[in-house]
Length: 206
Image (cartoon, rainbow, N blue to C red):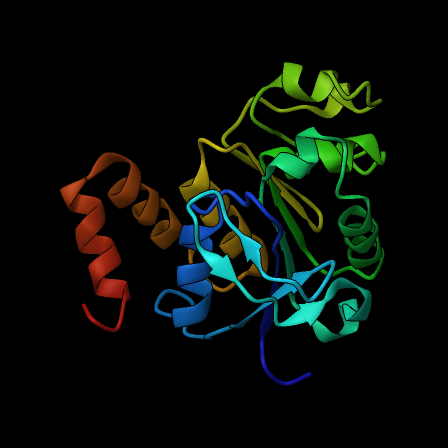
């Protein structure tokens, strides 16, 4: 595999904002200097409609997804997770983790991973500790009250933290200096003028 490829899981009611910052930075490569190809992957070939009403025609089927052909799997939140669904996507996540390929899960997707036992031995976060406790998982001792958490090849975050989700993933991929990631959060979370100067100096557009 020569191109950098990130696979985005898509399903009805996908929470558009959760992977938004991450996808923009991966695809453009303006922070990383390494543009990624974004491929959408779904359980079926049928179009899906996001929470924001965006209609997506999947690029590929989940059944054809191979960790060897990917650099990252992104699992956004959606209603199916709270309905107890998403089992096939969780199975894919397990394959990715077993293969040492990063998985980035945000909001409801963390509940799906919790139910499958994938958080039992990894530090993680989510929307709230109680949200995951409701799944009756065995990993509550590894819950961290933070905006985003990286443990080995797993990145987790809550729905209120799309910016931190993006910076945590970019940090795990090792493509952006930490001071730039800090500045990125400073710009998009706090409108910090000093952070803007640092970020502008790093990006090609200046």
